[in-house]
Length: 485
Image 1 (spheres, rainbow, N blue to C red):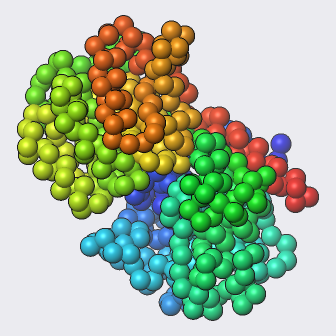
Image 2 (image 1 turned 90 degrees about the horizontal axis):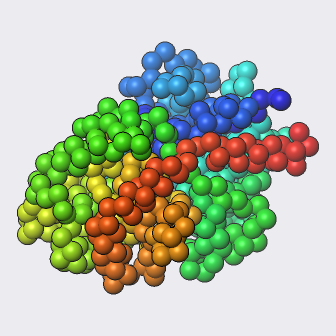
Image 3 (image 1 turned 180 degrees about the vertical axis):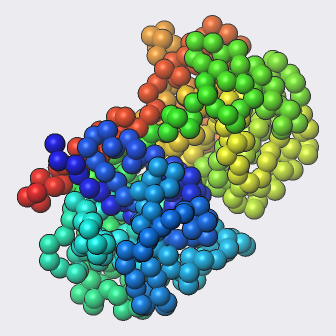
């Protein structure tokens, strides 16, 4: 079987640069695809963290002028990943996150920064990196959305194109006056091109002009074709429903492995959860929670936002405390939510602990030490924290939306009787139903036999990239076949 060469275009990749789940997917999927005859190289921006981590890169192409300054395309291998790095200091060598300054304000030149990423992705797709020409160019999220547009409007033979949506809420919409500055031809500014409600839509362009579309769970693929979930793009997506596939994410089971996790207090396996007692005590100590063996310790690892439903959790804290629960929260985001949880921790010492920010080691410790993990998202394309929770025996308590609905089996009476439950779901997504789910979880934990069965079921669930990688490989081959390859 011929090896398929795939160029992935992404704005972040774990472990080099990460702000969210996109980085985890971009970092883990190449290794999983290798088993299916797919070789992936990933094009990423040369942020300071990336250039500092990569040694021995070689230049494969130089640009005298790329959206405001000179740039180099460099090839390297780091952390087992085959990479192209867009070394453009005028675009990427700056403090802050990949998308915003240290004050959290989006960089004003984000249209140019990510148009440059897409432009170079298209150039590589057309053979612009000596000795390399991919069969497929796979663009991830709005930051890579113009890749398919450049390939389309350049004309001539091109590779197959796949566009993946990790979160439709982030669309990359910019002023129409930038059309020429971004190197897009006048004929591209139509509803069948890059035009989107009078502006330029990076994600919209990718969704309209790519051969195939994917998103990160079957339920989310259905939701984004509706008026409630489509966020203005539902018409386009309904019209291309035959091109849209929902493929669940996985997690890197070498990184997320409670039996060999160097970041947790004590390792453990599904057959022997004794180590979890030490991890639970460690978590309570780190978050200054009372060492109460009877408390149900709820964990949260999340961006603090309306989408993630953390305002609902803030309102549900009295019910959580009344049920004898404790909360260990790790996250950052909305200022009001950050203040709200910090105030709650001060008001309820020993019952609520929060760390504002993100730390990979603390995320692992929450998964290993919490009894249950709360994910009350109003919408969730896939979610990774609940997959990690399943693997670590932290019973996920999730809203019945998107990938959360697809990956967690609710502990209903029938599911419990059949011995298949892996967590707790609730719907609709509102405060009273979240409170009900919290109470139901605490009651379940008090029945030790049932609780252990739910934990065991979760830990037996395959949350790896094996099945998703197979589906991506099948998708790539279908695209190549459709294009006569």
